[in-house]
Length: 551
Image 1 (cartoon, rainbow, N blue to C red):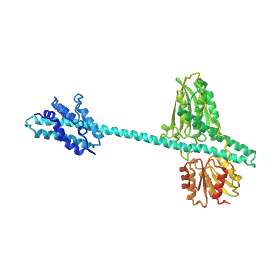
Image 2 (cartoon, rainbow, N blue to C red):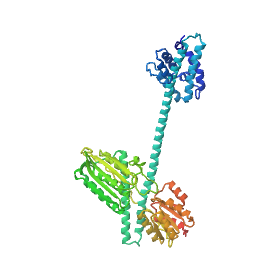
Image 3 (cartoon, one colour):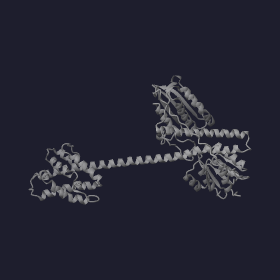
Image 4 (cartoon, one colour):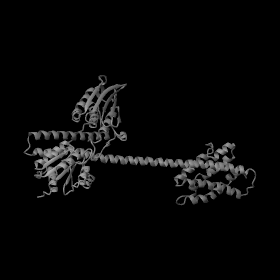
């Protein structure tokens, strides 16, 4: 009997012989025969059929190398490939899969030779054809095995990327909450301090004017923060609506420039505008477009050094109106560019960051521009500035005339009526105050001087260290969040110079108020962590206690 006919006649006997070996290498617990045999019967039958087909010597040689042609009719390739894939899914190693095929080959040849077969001259050709077909099936199984491995690896990479993305989002959210706390508490601290000072009967007209100016600036900062948060809330809930009507973009941009000019002049940054009169009219929500331009200009001014330039251009480009805001600032790190418009993302969210803000502005800008049917892109070269380009279609949005914007606002929380205690006297006590915010620094100096302290003020860690060389304060009061070197850097340097807590006790007066912030402050070398806004009585009580004035 020819080998191919023997296989087709004795499939069950061959599989039973092969099972004895397969069970020995199967990983883990016992397995039922159906799962164990998998596609083995199909592989045997299609192998025998392939052996009986007419093939040239070259075709036979290609099969032995795993390069034979695919015959979709006999199904050998599909069955062998699926067999390899299933074995990988069952926990097989590649070597065990190869061993299965060796056992299948050995089972066929052993039973054939042990049977009633009478050798003849065609046996060599039969065995050669059989080996070539089995080699082809093995090659297909290995391919299926490796495709399964690659698929699982791709799934793992995808899952890992999704997990890392979720972890990044959580970290960004935590950073945002810490920054939000800082941004809200810092102006609130100035308001609370100046209210206490203005209640003092000794204050004069100059105090009143300075205090009201600080309170106004701090209130404006709070309003901007709350507005950004409300805008994000509207965006997330789908309640952000636009009042689209024919508008004068030149007037919108000029108003935005005027709103930004005081900050630019204070920083020594030049504002340059270039408005094409032919591009001035477009359908848009003028108030929201004003918000877009103000945000882009404010960011540009914030990150442009003294003597730099911020430019805004309005011009046509085919069927679009373009608004371009560029600066000569420090530029954006290429690694951060993909996240520039993400909510809660900031290039520097640490306590050493040089610029304030919540990291919401650009995400709001992107949403507003896209809500107008436009687009925005950012280009930047580190050290050579950044350019934001807003593209608006001529007729960006069509709205129903009866559509109304959703009005929203803030309710007054009411005034808290609490028992207020006067600040504790600190007569003659030498205090070093460190805060990079000028308003907050002046307020602290004024508050402490009114209770008799002798105050030295510093706007940075470096200035504080210089002040320590000239005089020896009895108590240090320092902010944490400062650009360059923060409060943690300062206290570590103070302690490294031999000024131990008994020589110079220190208060961390900060808007970073999480439990971890308090722990870090104490571990760094501060004795007390006081959250902004600080009640004047509580702050002076803490300072008096650290100085040993508890009587």
